[in-house]
Length: 217
Image (cartoon, rainbow, N blue to C red; front, side, top):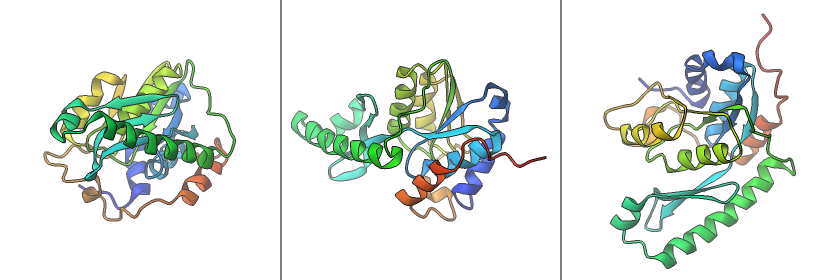
């Protein structure tokens, strides 16, 4: 099984979330690649779409390997096994954190265009990404949502490693993932088209009127 692109992945993912429609969930896409997936989920459920901004803390010599992640509201998640295995000293960790915090702040300003975050208190929120390997970024997003008062946190991704699913399941009320391969090899391996999503696309999708997505019957 593989997905044609993020639009296809979002539509497939939405079929496993239809039971949430009556709760009027808030769909939170992780930029950049998670937002096109989240857009399709929001459209299928007739739900509101917003963005939740987090940044992966990559190992300097292997930036795709996450030693942790940052989220809005001062959340920082660390992966001690990766930090120890890569022999990351405290100074390097703080240097990477400062750099990624600056980028997180820049993206918040870009994607929100001065808008405040949609209030999460007492709501069901669905955190959506285009896939997860280690789960560090998704964990940060889910913790941010919980810290902001979400009543129920659902994590939904089209594909994930077995390790990430096991890591994240205790941190959420529900985890929906249609594809959990024995060997992930990388999220992009499960898409025929995994072209990078640019910031303009994210802003365009977020600017679409939030409750006009479900087609009229």
